[in-house]
Length: 198
Image 1 (cartoon, one colour):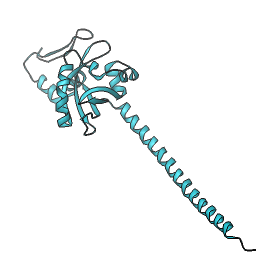
Image 2 (cartoon, rainbow, N blue to C red):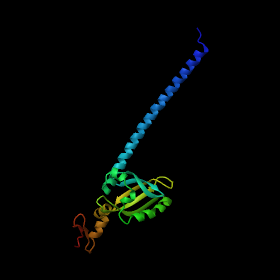
Image 3 (spheres, rainbow, N blue to C red):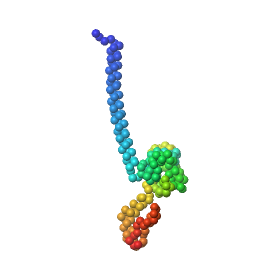
Image 4 (spheres, rainbow, N blue to C red):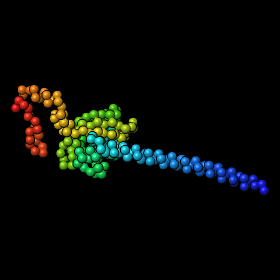
């Protein structure tokens, strides 16, 4: 018995559908593998981002003016003294010490032109203490409202590390006939270093 034309057409369509189904299954497998790799890469990135010693934050802007924090790392959260979730609800300009906001606003136009910038400023932490920092900013795209990635370094910590661990600085002080005294006033008054000439 010879199959009729309709039956043969249906059989051919079925075989074609089975081939397409097999190709789609392979594409789904590949997509799932890519999704797992992407998730692993994101997890790895997040681990590095959250555990770096530098304070890192990312923000949206409107014409270069910081408008919203979109990501902060653990180090930035500790520096400022707020929980990450609280920081993401705050406006970035509210993190700057009094008198610094106007300066930051004035830098926005230059940031749009230069695409990256380095400057010193000061944050205020949750306890309203002024924290001097150096900030490096870089825009992540070329729009009028670019996202910005920023690295902030606490200048108090950096300067203390430079004074305490820089051999050239120590040698210069040790060889000096001048009386050199470093006094720390916060959280309590104490001598941090007294030169040998003292």
